[in-house]
Length: 337
Image: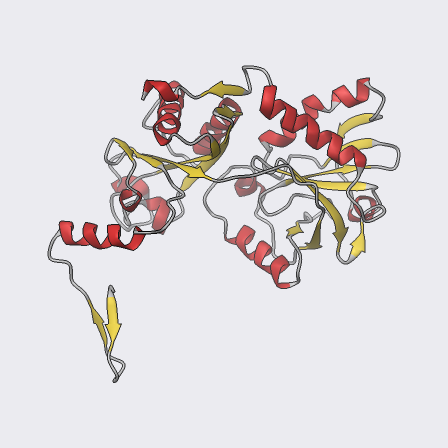
């Protein structure tokens, strides 16, 4: 135990005289437990570690104590990295807006992430990565940070196509201003509070409404609607993050237009009343990729059941993950490690 309290309530803190003792304690804490993080990369120590207890970030990193960092993700699916290039491009755009210069080129970052995934041996899960202004001090300005830092981790997790609908509420937590909402930064306190608010009310997640009364997004997901005329509508992306999954679905959904299953695919402002009056509603996100929404503020969406068109759109994304083009699916070279 790291600390103990005696009968009088005095708290005794253990002092580790050496790094070897601390490392031994950390390793012991993982004994007999599953290790969901098979590999991590850190530019601070310049390589990949497979030891869970070594997957740490310096506490004086400005991403930790000032929130000066951005992040992104990609899916590992059946031994392929899905959508990596789109996510990586957005990652660097976020970094530019956050005034963080990457220590590596885009191609080098891509290579690091591929090698990390290969070293992890993970064939289904997620890849998450962060760019920070770096460690250096505890001041507000990053001027004292020698250089930025890049971190990445592989998360071994299972996920399957969602066929069950979820309940949502309208969030009372203020959404982020446009500058921060449109970059994928680590300041997620509003997102966390909005999810907690939903869970406290027995719902899955919440919906943000912007200051003009239009639908914005979920806590970490985009939203889409299907009208009774079979129009697929995405709320505008001017004030929210442009989700890679949403952008991909906009491309794929035209297949259903060609088949006559959808009337059209559109991106525009949509009011709360119009949204609640649609026939189908869904969340979109990288690891979902679609979650049907069947109830909003205790009232059903459409007939209150998972819609046929929602599942057809979900099928399009899953087929793209299984057998999409090379631009979307990058084979992981596990044999090279």
